[in-house]
Image (tube, rainbow, N blue to C red; front, side, top):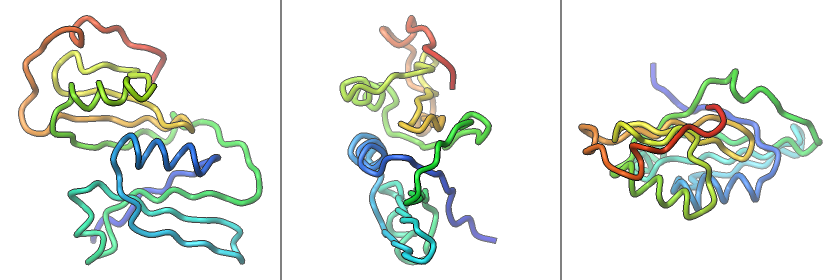
Length: 146
């Protein structure tokens, strides 16, 4: 068995690609348009997974845009996506600088949660051991839910 991808439906291509690629730093590995199915799939991978995606077709995040309008709700019942980052504090600061709300700040130097434009929870985990606990992160309150 080999993990291939997780699929998340999106409602706005531009907003979602900006969020996942420009802000989170995922790479667009492949785009598939289906006239018959009336959808577009965007396969994204973390930079360190790009080689595995290109050689084995995974792991990836598949964003599915259905051409016919549909309202998606209940992102919370999906659970969450998780990505490991090199420096949780620097990464969260980059997100804040780009207008992203940190729903669960990395008070413990290890874990944070944010949401995508479509309400999908995303967990960010510190690579290796947790970082030293420090301000302003240790005093930040949760915002909303995740």
